[in-house]
Length: 213
Image (cartoon, rainbow, N blue to C red):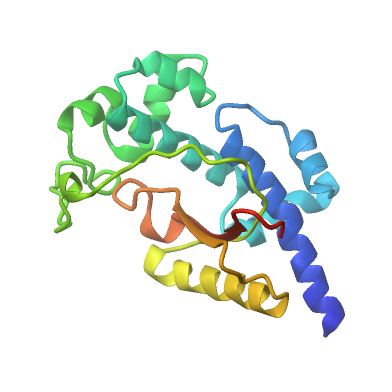
């Protein structure tokens, strides 16, 4: 029983290395050999393990996070479509437009001009959220690097966030990591009005301002 649990932990750890690399380098066209090397698995086992971890093929995952990242920049920046395409691994704007249209049902130009961001191909439907973004109090701070423990989850935020925090806090309690300087950091990577809600990425993490974890 213990060996089975340890194996599952090892699979998750290695798969997460690949996922984190892809998050950090959305525009890089990584080959299978390189990604398998990051995971420490042979190419023969790599795809099967990643599919089990992600709940979809690695190719689908990579395509989705690139296009969703592009959609985020289209709605939040004034950068040109060509620049956004380059940053997300597309050398030609025409290839980017074709892929974007297939996922979202419209061109990048229309997506940017519509100024409404309902889920996927239903972008002409108004967002039903009752929260007005203008009511949020936002501050930007630069923090010093610190070590954290974290749990990564994929799913609807209301379902996956609690699971992540249960695991983080359970580990912290078991290893006596709680203290007055403990910080809790939750990161929601995706907009559920753009990314399918059950494909959204979330991380719950614990850090200490002074002490080392």
